[in-house]
Image 1 (cartoon, rainbow, N blue to C red):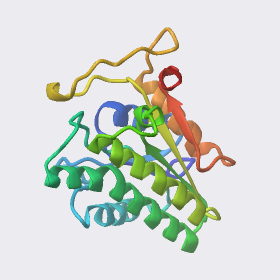
Image 2 (tube, helix red, strand yellow):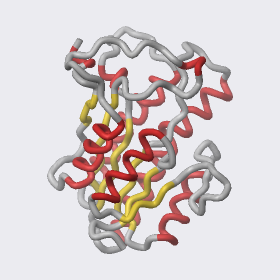
Image 3 (cartoon, one colour):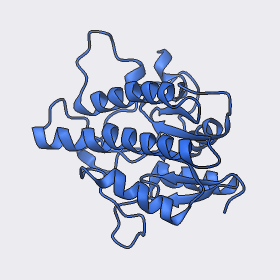
Length: 224
């Protein structure tokens, strides 16, 4: 067991997720890495209705001291509209599964020591700068739903679970060429890195007096 306990990182095998896992390991966490790869003991498809519940049970079986979750797994698209089935899948992965995992952890911590834990959700800085009258894309909408559910969960489980979020800006180019877009201007003289996001996640996991907060890691882009 890690000195700080065990943390589940969804989508932790690649890109920002891998950076988060590396950072948390270096800080003494026992990191459980979720992915969809069939050879991963914590394999689970979060788009399935029972995917989150199955993953949570696997994580608890692997680490009885599970006390934290980083909800990093996500489906990304820049499309203004998506087929109904694709939009529903995106909502399940990006918003519904994180809420289920957070709720399951909160309920578990109410009954098992150490009775205190933390969740960090990965949002997207673009939702911080949407105009009030803007029409969000399906992706943006899913992250807005996650933001709202985060606040609800933080209030519901305040006695045993802190729930916060990191909102990255233009960190990495999307893998799918069809979803690539200009990163846009930033206020600082550099763009954020995956390691910057990972540092913010580690801070929020360990900041015992912080809950219900969103930390933008976007080099000031949301201020422009």
